[in-house]
Image (cartoon, rainbow, N blue to C red; front, side, top):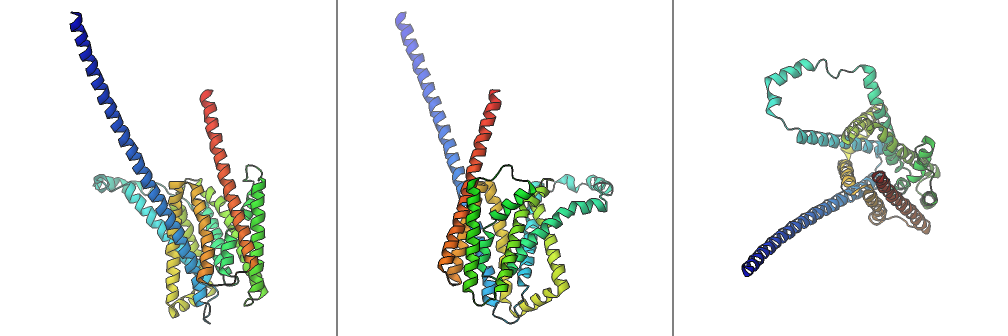
Length: 399
């Protein structure tokens, strides 16, 4: 009897061990499959981030080179219009508006495909009865709704159009250096508008000082060795760039206020750039500069290639940057943008040879140091905010 019970218990123990082995193997298989799926997803995300990074950096490099090439290739012609920068800005507004419209239509078609109910006569009849009474706005509401977009379009015009026009008076690479020094006016505007939640630290002031000295030194070096332009022209070009950079500092604040009204990015881009296109078109038509630019591009068809490429590459860069922020975060996206600016300066000197003096080299190093300090400080602040958020959530759970 005891022997039978022992044999029975051994059999049940062996069956139990087999079930455990089967369960463990099954769990190991599931864990392996899950790990493989996570590895595959991580790999696909890495490929996406790499493709977006290359798309953004490559598009912006092509945009900068094609824009500089417009002046380098056609400035020597007697009929080269001084307002070509505004004409180029109009192309930029137009292509961004068309691109934003395409993205909006694509998202709407993808989010809500047409169904049978949409084609039913009853639905169409109800929509026909409801349309006259729904969503009607008076003139004041329409004006109040579009005023922020008009203000934003003017700021973007000042940032883009004046920066383009400055190339008639200063070297193109100086424009790139000026546009890299947005920290200075951003700190000033943030302080004046009371948007800074805390005082700036020593690292931010150090970055601003490096950017100030580097930009001033590069402007001085460009002016002292550029004998082809009079001093007043160089000073006027620097004034245009300073105004453009100052407008850059206001744009994020204006965009934030508009998007706080639950406006999508493509709607913001579409309305802003449609207004910008209309503004430049009306202004250039009224002054006769539109006719001058059209005549020039008809006499030199190759210039149209530069204009179209500028519009296409700019929209591609904006689209890739927006997607890159969603996929990898703003810190990574800004880092790619900073590296791209350095590559733009290097390629500018390689493709369009120009004199590089010791003043230029030291000034570029100072600007690079300021940008690196600013980016490092931004990443450090974001890490501290994340840690503070985790700590606060832990306190809430404990409470």
